[in-house]
Image 1 (tube, rainbow, N blue to C red):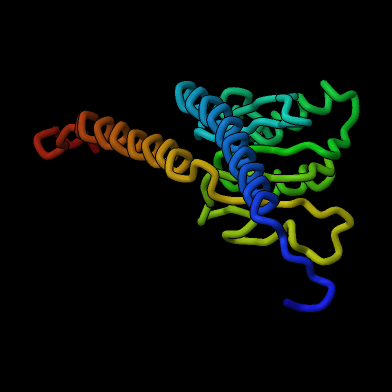
Image 2 (image 1 turned 180 degrees about the vertical axis):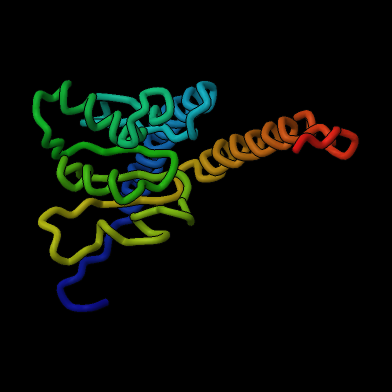
Length: 195
């Protein structure tokens, strides 16, 4: 054992494990609520992403994608939750808040989280196409930022990914059916030519 380092008694190690397990259960609880939001978005034809803003284990705000219905390109789940949370707190700074999101945030949402000063971001599934936390960019790790957000990935990952995959699979099938059922253009071969 190195000098200055004390051995932790077994009961102390176990209690820290219990706290960690409790925290995982809390993360799963709030992510389940974000998943409900995502399913609500899917039911209204929006990309199924949900977000929940939490302070001191109390939900301040929830949101899901509304870009299509509201005709607002900034109406992502994260932005909706942050806007509502700012109203509840009466302040655009949300220090100490955790944001639970079913899909890895984009550049815009990461920027908003940095400005809002949220403490922690908990994400379900990565977004390999446009994720700005780990997948395509590491926006939260830029060295010149004056605020750091703790980020964690993989809470209910399979469920979060499944909601997205099911939505896009269903959308592809619907479009395929629409395409195949559309009347083909009438043939012009037998039509008289008018010059």
